[in-house]
Image (tube, rainbow, N blue to C red):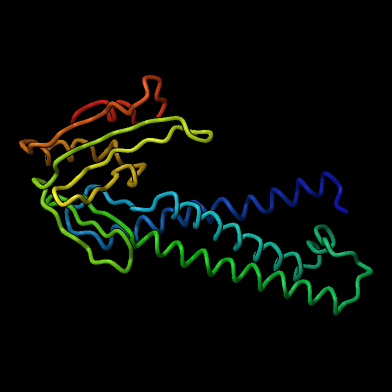
Length: 225
């Protein structure tokens, strides 16, 4: 049984491993997405934002425990501090437990990485020439010109512990894309979106934006582009 001070040290070790993995994973997915977009892209995002972010966090968490366990089990000084298996356990039982834990964590990591790929390849790109949208990795990428936008609908409501917002562009074939899937670059890209929609005849509906909306992009949600 670990003492409170050792549990804190163990938590700090996990945090030191986890934070760079999550931030690095989000950054890498974003850069890879931009590589697949046309030249002149000013906003790129995923069609499955929550799906992708959760998978990145879970994959990072699995890798964190894999690395943490490897370090603890193969570094004598760390093993003496963080070893969670009782020292009097039989060696074979201890090794079997370690092997099973690593296999389960590696399997979870693999599953989460597959989900990350699915989310990363379900993307959209807003560029000077128009929009490209791919709803799922196994569907074709569809190209749209800006004059095919027929509606913009925004919303903002309180969800579980945070404000949930959307900025949905609807196209004349019924397809739609939520540009907030490109956070945190929406505010920077908004002027370019306004220029591209200038002269386009489309409807705008912000009736679903709560009066007390506290989302960071609330000013954009209430304004017609």
